[in-house]
Length: 293
Length: 293
Image (cartoon, rainbow over all chains, first blue to last red; front, side, top):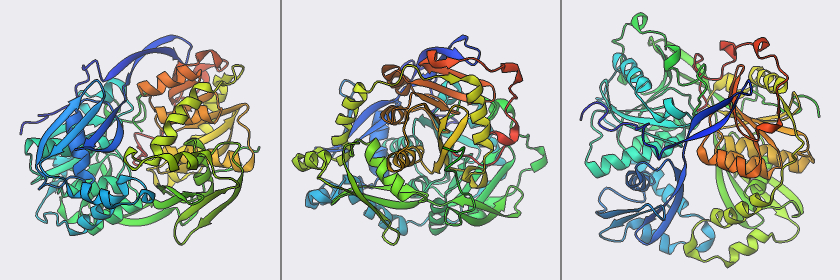
C-alpha cells in the first residue's frame, strides 16, 4: 500500500462547521468545529447501537464495530453493507444468521444490553489470540511515523477536538482515519481492513488516544502486535497488553517514549540525540489552542 | 464551601499502580498509571450499566449517573445507596418505584438498551430548562480558576491519562473530581451535589475534556449556566449550548480562550497583558510526557 493511501480530508465541508464567537479580548472570531452525527447500526434485522461519528466512512465504521465487538466473525459472509444517508443508518447483511443473533434470541429481557452478550465471548477470544513474536519496531520508524502523522493535513489541525488512528508498516503511515471518539477511528480501520482485504501482517498501530483496555483489546483482536500512542496508559490496558504479549508504547512525544509491555520487539536503531524535540507547531497539545481530549 | 472542599487524592494507593518498563534509551523506568475498575449500577432491582471508573467515589458516581441520564428525578426519594466493594456494585434505592422503571417494564425486547428510553425524556427535559440569565463570568475568575486547578495536586499530575471536572464559584474551585472518562467525573459531581445538598446557584463548571453534546447536556441538566474547558468544541455541543443559552468557553489555555455561546455573561475585567502565558510545567498537554486524551 502507498503511504497515506487513506487519509483525513479536512476540506470535506460536511465534516466541519464554521462557527462565530469571540476571543479572550472580546473580539469576534470565526473558528471551525468538527461535526458529530448519529449513525444507527443494524446487523441484519437486529438494531445494535447508535454511535456519534463525524460520518465520513459509515460502512467501514459499521463493519469494524461489529468485528471489534465480536458480533461478526471473520467466517461470517457479508453479503451487503447498505448506508442510508437520510435516516443515518447502516445495515450489515450476512448470508446466514450470525452466531451473535442466535445468542441474542436466547437472552432474557432482564440481562440488559446486547453489548454484554458479546463481551464474554470477546474476552474468551482475546485469551486465545497469539500475536506474531517476530515482529519488530525500530525506534527510527517510530520517530518517523510520529513526525509524518502529526504534520499531515487533518481535521485535528483544522478544527481540533478529534482523535486519530493510523495503520502503519515500518516507517510508512498507510491508513489514517479520524473520529470524535478514538474507538470509532480504530473501528473504521478494522472495517477498512476487512472490506478491502488488508492483512495485519507486519503492521504497527498508532493512536493519539489513551491506551485503555478497550484500545488494547481491539488492537490485539485485529492481530496487530505493536501499539503506539502519544498519550498515557491505564493499569488495565497495561495488564491486558502484557497478557497478550502486545508491545505497548505510550507518552511518545518528540524523542521520548515509555514501553510498558512487549519491550523485546523494540530495536534501538535511532540516534536519540539526532531526533528533534517536538516542534511547537507539531505538538498536538499545549501551546496550540485546539485540543482533542 | 471552602476552596477545594473536595479534591483529588493522588496519594490514595488504590487509584494508581506502579509499573516497570523501559524508556526511549532502553533504560529501565518505573511509572505510575491510573487504575480502572468495573462498577455495576443498579436502580432498585434493575441493572442499569457497568462503568469503568477509578473507583474513588462509587456512591456519588452511581447517583450522579442516574440523575444525569434522567433515570432519577429530583422528586424521587433516595432511601439508601449501598456500595459493595467485593462485587463492585452500587445499588441506589428509592422509596417508590421510579417513573423510569415503570417505562422500562412497558418496553419490548427489540427496542434495545435501557439507555434509549431515558434519552428521549432527557432531550424533552433539556428543552424546558431555563438557565439563570444574570450569572456572570469575570475573565479574572477564569484565569485564576485555570491556574489553581492546573497546579493543584492531582492524579493527572501523578499518572496522566485522566480527566478532571471542577465545580467552581467565582474564582474558587470547590469540588474537583477526576476519572478515566470525563462523563464519570461530571456524574460524580452531580451525585455529590444531590447527596450533600449543594445548589447550582452561582456555580461555574470547568472541565479538562472536550465540549461534546454529552458534556453540554449534563451541565445544562445540572442547572449550571457557564461551562469552561481547556479543550475544543464539537458542532453539536455548540448547537445545544446556544439552544439552552449556556455560556460555552473552550480552548482556554494561558490567556487565550474562545466563547461560542452565551458570550453576554462574560465580563472582561482581566488585564490580558498581565496574565502569564501558561508555564510549561502547568500545561496539561504538550511538553510533559503524560496525556489524558
